[in-house]
Length: 443
Image (cartoon, rainbow, N blue to C red; front, side):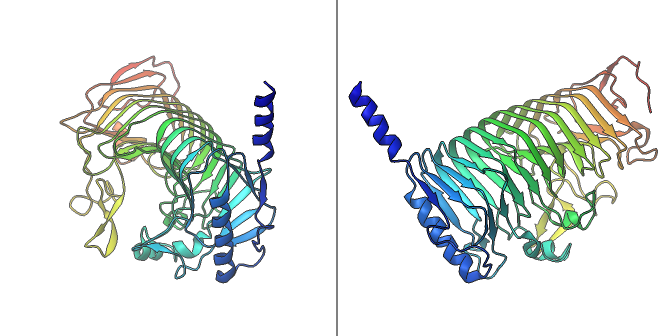
């Protein structure tokens, strides 16, 4: 027993606290030269971390160049108590071929914790990457780096960090196993407007938290961005399953599952979410090319408030997004598989199709939609593989537009094998079986 105690003491005594500034990082200088030097220090520290170590970024602002990679970290804590401000020197940013490297990337980790004593900040300096509203996206497209990427992580914790103005995705991940994301915030804005106007929305692809893997819990986070707020993705060969998102404030392009190709996503719950002045609300989507091997099943959206959405409050169908034509420019009216211009502009100017992936056993319960600017929604399954087991239980729309895209039907509803409306759901999608109690008052 004494030998074991001495061994435990020896292991504990080897744990270290490594301070970024004390290792030679320079704060307050935002030149490209300093960003490169600070990157070298950060990378060197990551390579030296041992189990039990804590790497501290002190309460100051440090410039960094992107392309930082941490690999094979085991039982390590990184405490970002200050600000990591990534360079906006686009020409100097390192690339892998034609694409810029991720700002900060972690590969093959176990028990990695990213935290802060208060609220640390990862500042992506996104404004220059986004470019001039509208034109910047047409010119640059996806040629922008994600702020943080995590791949193949076991027992991962992300907490108490602010992701600010990422050039592209804020947090993107794959192959997570037992991951927790909590008490974090995402902010990606061009203006201070309390809405997602056409100027702000040109900061496309600034997804909040994109997660894929198993046994994932996202809670008590706030997201204001210009794309998917919390998005459930899928790895190519392994299903994403057992995901819980709760107690969230989310405003952007939806609480999202997808876009999914020929992968499987199952057992996902979104609950207790407030979506203030969001663009989309509930957003479940397959991308172009998804076959019958793609499955999104056993999904619950519960206790959701969608306040004054500027786009579709509910969208279940093909991803509404553009594609790059002829390798030259992005055409928002050429969809992949559904156009951003649909249904305002007719075919063939715009297009919309539903890939043949299967939507099954999806429930929306106690969902309140307040003053939507468009019709309540689009429910669009594939004719050869229609939606099965779709339930609206208390999905209430207050003050829908009198002359929306679908008139008195309120919803576009097609490709549904079994849909049921229950409780005080109103309006009832036209292709659903009406089991409502009809006791509600339409406001």
